[in-house]
Image (tube, rainbow, N blue to C red; front, side, top):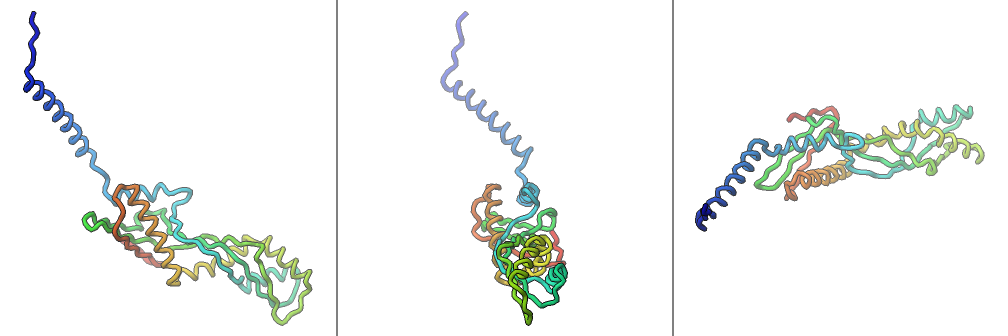
Length: 219
């Protein structure tokens, strides 16, 4: 039996038909599974933050003075009646809580290539006290050098209590313009990383609005 040979135009038409069929299948699959919107992508991005659901926005190192209540507890251990000022250097880490993605708002303008982001109120982690930087200054009292050394050692052993005591000072700085600017810059870096992972490209502008304590942000 003689073989039927297809002409060149027929072969070309067959190949074209197969290509169109493949393209049609791909297009149908893409339409059936559309790419998640930016809000959904951002929510997933927040949910995958590790090890804790928060954005580390800024860090600083400051010397803070302990409260009178803390120094009173310290002096009571040695049954000393005196007035002292105790201070120490601590690492302060400012964060934005991310456990509730609905507390964030995000708007992406694809045409202008700009991103607007509103966040919950920033907070700070428990200060990490450098116990070797503890300093004690006496006020109108004479305390022996050995006693001062013992007070410093005991304060170092009370590191956890001292950290909690200094947390009040750290949180008070959240209202300072310079601190909020540093936090905003950190959020912008975080947002730029998100845009890269979401394949949005490099934003021409990232606007950041930080929430305030007690303020709720609606979507």
